[in-house]
Length: 606
Ligand code: F6R
Image (cartoon, rainbow, N blue to C red):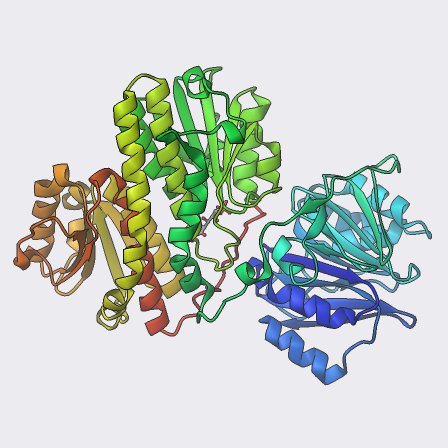
């Protein structure tokens, strides 16, 4: 949610900033801008719309020469997308980019207005910029420090001062920021992909540390101005992982990367035919310490948690609550010293998920994070972390992250069931083997993509689409529906198939498309009856099922047959079919699949 990049060194800063923003555009694409500081002062260019608009404007006005600079790609919170509301925001003394929300900006605006300041934008950021300006008397550290004392909310700031050549100042609270380390050149960025082309080495900036970044040095100070010794980190993602690699969209690339992402995440955690989390520093008796699990997350990650609930309850017989993080944190959840809170997040920076985890920690509850981005806030603050190894996920719609999150939930459920004595060693080994087999068979899904693509023309004009399922299939139906609506803009809802007749069936009329998931044998007669109810009202039914199920041809208009693995592991396959289905419909409708309107990846505001 908003991307920041900064560069100081001998190369052309504008080129490097635009390149970095290209790799950060998934964090917001309402507008973009850069500021360059050179001998003549600070020049700023910004443009509403996609990064391409900024690139054109830079060409028009002429590329600034060498110098140091900061850039920003915006996901609008305060104030509509417009040139004026774009970052960087300026005063004659300084220029600043911001990711986050200044909660007390009206109060600060009043304070500064009383001192004679005027405001041109509708943004919260402009108040922070002018507050630093107000305190700036030649000492950047002092001005930033004084401003931080007054600012409430979340922020990552990159700041240039007109009289501080070659230097970027940076600070963060509740929004991510890293300092990239090069040879006689250095960077700041919201996320690793922005700088991967230039360096894989970086420092993670901790909360309320002020970084002073010059071409030949990076000094990080705490608020008492004492230098902080930082650990040099190395990103294990290579640049190819953050590029499209010949695919038309990141989303398609990421769907196709799932067999590898699953293997990378699961295989290192299987030893002696059972899950083994010892390399993750999870104590051997970990799961026996709890009598209730609370899973909290947002969006797709929350649906992964919903699958996890079914797995854990069925196998380990431990009660599991699943909450949207934005609800969990405000509903005063009942937690005891035998509760485990699991937070699931691809980015590790989602504001609500982070806040939910902090709430649990503040009550002394053990927290376990399932996170894809190493070094992210959630990964750093959780008591225990299980990293998924999906590599960078760039498309706004989450695909491979969901798969590795549920794969992790399978490992947890099997291990938890074993430790709690619900399954013996033989069953543990059998389930672990089934999991590995299901992962191996996800490759076959890639061959089904053509058949799924050929269905897209039948649905691209639909105004509404329903997803049905029972049990594990219901959890997946919710994810399939979210995927479709967020990238194709077709209205869609998911229902537990048995619930349809309690109201929703009134929406089913002639030709209304319905995707029915049929992968669970024990629920087969029930879901088939529900499908017949839909057919009887004229619904156009696509069935997604296992090749082993013998279904009467009169219950569907279209059918997608998935490889046959144990029902319990079918979500690993079915979700890929749902992702292809949503993807090809969105492509057929001409949608911008990787950057759906109004959305951004990594939602660092509440
Ligand atoms: C949907 C999607 C979002 C994210 C949600 C949580 O495709 O990507 O719903 O799943 O914003 O993000 P993370 O997992 O980064 O916490």
